[in-house]
Length: 243
Image (cartoon, rainbow, N blue to C red; front, top):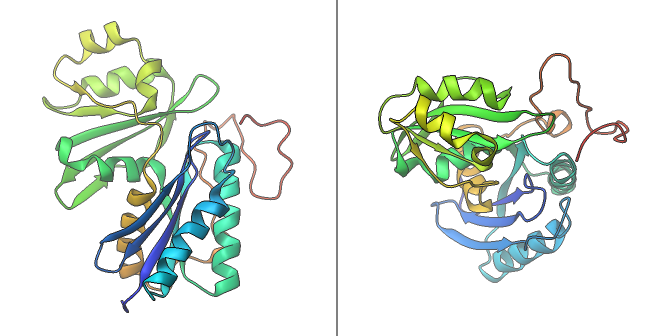
């Protein structure tokens, strides 16, 4: 990969998020975080502009973009993905999508060898995935699932001693039942979303493997749902869907 930097956008939380600028040698150059209360991806454009100003100061070209594609906030993800797709298309830059749970596991990978990331969803569901972690990787075992809190506790009970459970979905689990069913696991931070830096770091790794990135037109937010619950694609009406 040529010398330059990767720009990342994170908007998977209902409020907050931001943008980050990462050099090709994995050095973080700038991170613009949005304050809580900025909802639905608002403030993404100013955060990106701050990163661009920094890249101009350092005379470093943009090599590509990375964006959080979820799962997460319905409105926030759509704003972030649409903005980043337009930016990539307008500047003819490669783009890659990063799953929010993958990025959370990546940024917390040093905490445990086995990690479960659980984040809030809607309709009495939680998003969940299990990861095998090392100093240099956080490998997801299978697809991210949307499960009820009652379905997740047996899953956690099967984990080995020392495994860690993290994410905003922790507060939707009955703590007494969880501790009784899985006394061998550790409970971590109730993180709502990954940092923009984590999206940038995984984006750089993705673009190093695939410098062409993903087809911009095909990139979509990810909303795992059970078979009887549908979610729209970009461009569809949103009135019947949750935030």
